Image (cartoon, rainbow, N blue to C red; front, side, top):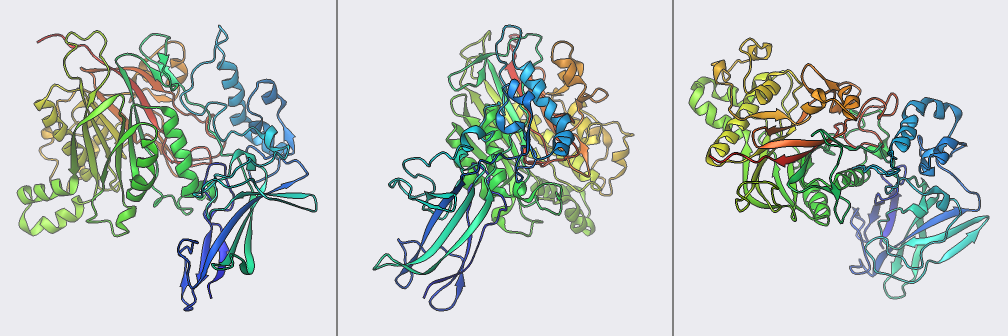
Amino acid sequence: MLSVLRVHLPSDIPIVGCELTPYLLLRRPDKTVTTDDVPESAPLDGHFLRYKWYRIQSDRKVAVCSVHPSEQATLQCLGCVKAKIPVAKSYHCSPKCFSDAWQHHRVLHDHAASSVNENGNEEEEIFGRFNSTGSGVVNATLTGSASSASLTNGSTSLYPAAVTQRSGGETWFEVGRSKTYTPSADDIGHVLKFECVVVDVETKLPVGHPNTILTSRVIPAPSPIPRRLIPVSGTDMMGQLDSDGRISSSGTFTVLSYNILSDTYASSELYSYCPSWALSWPYRRQNLLREIVGYRADIVCLQEVQNDHFEEFFAPELDKHGYQALYKRKTNEVYGGNIHTIDGCATFFRRDRFSHVKKYEVEFNKAAQSLTEVAVQTTQKKAALNRLVKDNVALIVVLEAKFSNQGADNPGKRQLLCVANTHVNVPPELKDVKIWQVHTLLKGLEKIAASADIPMLVCGDFNSVPGSAPHLLLAMGKVDPLHPELLVDPLAILRPHSKLTHQLPLVSAYSPFARGVGLGLEHQRRKMDITTNEPLFTNCTRDFIGTLDYIFYTADSLTVEALLELLDEDSLRKDTALPSPEWSSDHIALLAEFRFQTRPRR
């Protein structure tokens, strides 16, 4: 007979909005062991599995620490209450917890104070508004509110009101009848109970005892400090809000670039400082989606997007928010793992703002094969390919704007835009390969530019710090022949050094922060390296902090209007690197608002 051998949950702590899927180990009637589900629609030997989820609510009210969400709160910051900051952020589990977190916590107070300008109007924040999902209205959850009248959690259809049980000062509310369950705000501070039992198809009665497991208390999804869009064009206006709350201005558009950290690389060995529940993919995918959607960018360039995660999660979820998706998976000459979990570059654009014209896929492996056929002696071809073939790719898309370019001389002309999205992931010692890949991409973009008068954006994680040869090639159009990184060139693929050039007028989008003066820009300037005009960091782990990610644009055809403010040490919790419960990647997102320039008639 069908029997349940083991039940456990892969995550220690349930989080609001993050799906819980128990792991079940079953023994079939033929004595074989499986993890496959046995639903009522497909019974096995006259039996199937029935699931139930309960919320266990105690008569005793419980508040959760905002810093250590697995701990109960013992004190509350009254300053938060006065500043009308969400009550969930005011709780702490001990005086030491509050003291250690103060440097981070006081930023909440500063943001609350600055969010009201002289006219008493709140400034628009691009992501993580104080009332965002997951910040939790804990007052409501502490009163032991009853479950909703009908259950919709999971994939099952609506069914009658929850059945409750009461025992020893505890009330059990039935909240779900699917194998999976997604905790809601009503569950915050409460323990969940999962029940699984084998049921006879004929009698619909349980066979044997149910298998149960209890979770720890449900915690609200941590929400990061809001990041605002800072104007750099010299005006104080930030554009108007459209019907869905998105900042928009005629003739402008926004572009997001973000390495989201593939689940394959998000191991507890690499990121031991991040809680295991915050590293789990069910948590990170919801947190990343909430962040990405919150930016409301017109164009989204993501790196390290696993193939299966693109198909099963990001493409369908962002489709719901009006985005069309394009994807280029990395090649797998070197990669030896599951082809479904290999990562790549994904570019999304809002259908109401742009339409798709053309797609180019750059495979650096193919370029390496072409290079070795021409430039490398036969005896060295194998060694050359071993050095050059690294599976990296770039995705280039040409889009057509659906909005008018205000003030254009020829309003009937099609407004095209070329967007390149890449992840140059090459071992640090292979400096020649990294430079060669960036140069190869730029020469490809030059060909597109030669065929059409088209503005260009180059986005991605280049794994190259400011001042490195790849960065200088992008930003300056050339590399000094005496640059030390050019000394690493065993295949002579970088010679003559005079060929390491391009004619695209590329400028780093964040450079205005380094040059700017005025309200808001001075604070951002302190987060910039004024010698390179780049942010101090876009990647922050225990072992490394520095800038690896960029958005470059052609300065003769585009103008930067505004930039997403950068993070600083005050925005990251004390002694915490990325990823963290608040930020689910080891990189930070970059976002710029651009305006198409009006060019003089030729």
